[in-house]
View 1 (cartoon, helix red, strand yellow):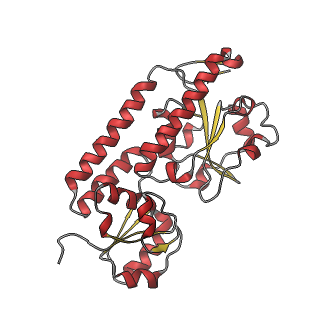
View 2 (cartoon, rainbow, N blue to C red):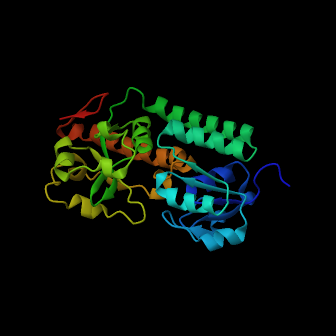
View 3 (cartoon, rainbow, N blue to C red):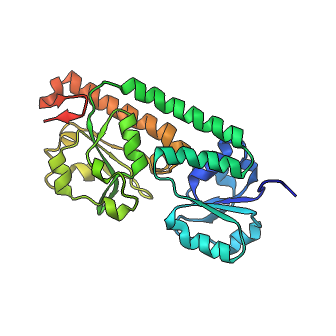
Length: 279
């Protein structure tokens, strides 16, 4: 018998990616249907969506550990526990908690040193971006997690925006764990006048033209200056390595482009400051 779990079902993408980065992809026997990273993981049996799972398929795989994410998968976890399976559910909502998840996951599979090294490497990469943006003007950023209703970014996304050199326009909502607690009005977005809009609608493609065409949004700096962008949800809305690497890099590139455009055009009537863009 193996000392550590050897038949793992992952109900969420970031756990799958983390295990592969730790060199433990061969232990995974089932994955979420939304899994994208790494590409070879898509060859594993798909046993779940995000809010539901195929329990008979999971049982057929005979897992010795099932891993999930957050209260959103609580019902799935409870049913699997009732069926006698060991289940661990993470609930990371911040950059610090993502790094903690990686370290704890390493402990669960006997790769403590590898997990500590991975977390340290991710921290170094984030520190490099943070240092590169220190002291630079900080464009105001609206991260749109959903379009109807309008939902502002979850905590780890807002933190990554700051690391990437931006200034989130709804800082007071960053501690809100539930999406329904981060609903904002179109009028308030307009009033706060973001210089860049970054959208990522989990499960569907962003239509930047639809965002730009919203009633009353024509005078928003981001729309007026053509700074409405999409980052695919797999890169930014997964609380794991993808967000801390590719997601952060894309945010950094977008925010740098906005800053460069403002510099090249005389700030377009807006004063750039180290705290953000001030009308």
